[in-house]
Image (tube, rainbow, N blue to C red; front, side, top):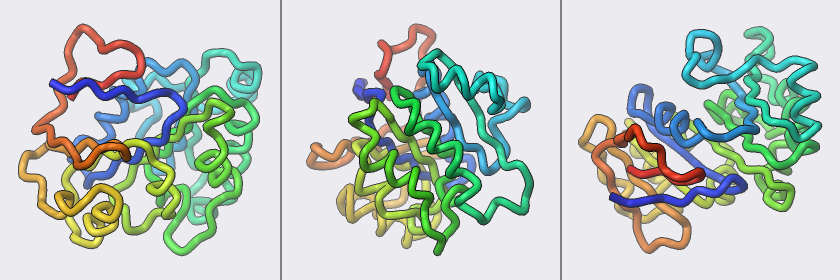
Length: 220
């Protein structure tokens, strides 16, 4: 058993195809976080997913965020029409940057920054300058080849579940090493990698135990 110490101000990159376990993994990692803003472009973290313990963005929630109080907020798309415009998310991410001392979670990175579009300046700021403000960023994706490079170049931790395309594995191999090119055979198996490690560690399946790990730790 390996204990992974993920601190609240680090950047985490989690990749895997639908059903591979990446969202379940992130839900577990973020379960004890008291100040969280989750961007939900897929619309899957709302009332039908009560285990995430999120409340939809509101003026009241925003005030609590800016006041430094505990709050776990979900930002859904307001309509399908804004889904391809990264500027939609900019207002919310600016509030995260202004508030500090919280974690920003992108449930699908390319849903916030569609392929070929320019990332919101606030998102770049959170990734590149947010550490000193106590801002952590967790980004999930099915397609690593489609997301902005800084989502990986700024990452401290990588967690890679099953991926379908070699294109995606090649992008990750440039950060994690050649072992990522080998397909993961276990249904919910994944690779864990920290940027200071020589190579990734493989885990056949995440096992969540009743006795939770100390705050900020994950035990695969």
